Image 1 (spheres, rainbow, N blue to C red):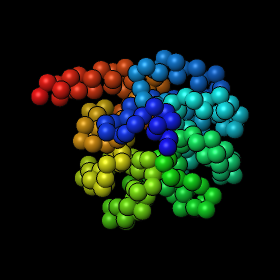
Image 2 (cartoon, rainbow, N blue to C red):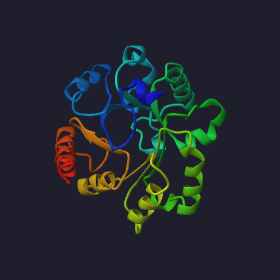
Image 3 (cartoon, rainbow, N blue to C red):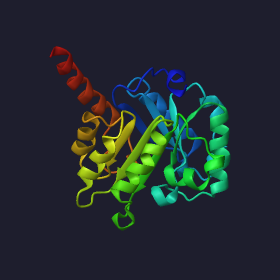
Image 4 (cartoon, helix red, strand yellow):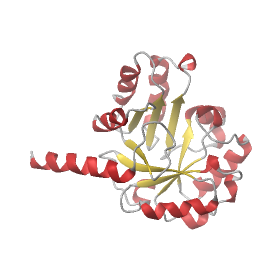
Amino acid sequence: MVLSRIGIKKISRPLIIAALPVKRVEDIEKMREVRDIVDLVELRVDYLEDPLALDYESLEKEKVLITLRDADEGGFIKHPNEVKLRLLKYLDERGMLYDVEMRFVEKYHSEVNYEDKIVSYHVFNSSQLMDIDTLRAKARKYLDKVLIFKVATVPFPGYRSYLTSILELGDNVAVMPMSPSARERIAFALLGSKILFCCIDTPTAQGQIRCNHVREILNTIDKYDRMN
């Protein structure tokens, strides 16, 4: 089980994940700055010219989430699908955690393992928005197998209700608005979203705040919860 391997027994609260854009192999050294602050470090390897060049074997015992994000869903560099398939197969064989887009899974279903992984759906253009009933139906097909089903969207009329409707589907769901408002990201985490992304220094999305600030906020809230 992925959770036990990385030292997390159960997702009973939001996982604090530091999003780290890996533009050079040396960038992974930045993980050391937040090891004691976050639950996981997301290595965004779509920033690399060659995502396969990273020494993933050396990362097997680290608390990392590997993401080779598709360019259509916010990836920095567009990489061939064949490269992504090779990487996901390699990571899966080693029991490592990765984030893969729902649309990629649907396209390469027989070649991509998504069990105990994070499956995601991102909306950067509201004109291409999947209607809520369709998305809810798709999400239900994954919830019993994935570690977390994640939805992130840019603001559009009714986006808060849209995200809340997905959040209510289960206990392993993460939703987040991609807006400048850090308050909204934290608010959804407090409502039950199982991921709260933060940044070490350079944000990979709007609304991300520094990891030490996120930890301080959540620790303060936890303190008051224990008092009541």
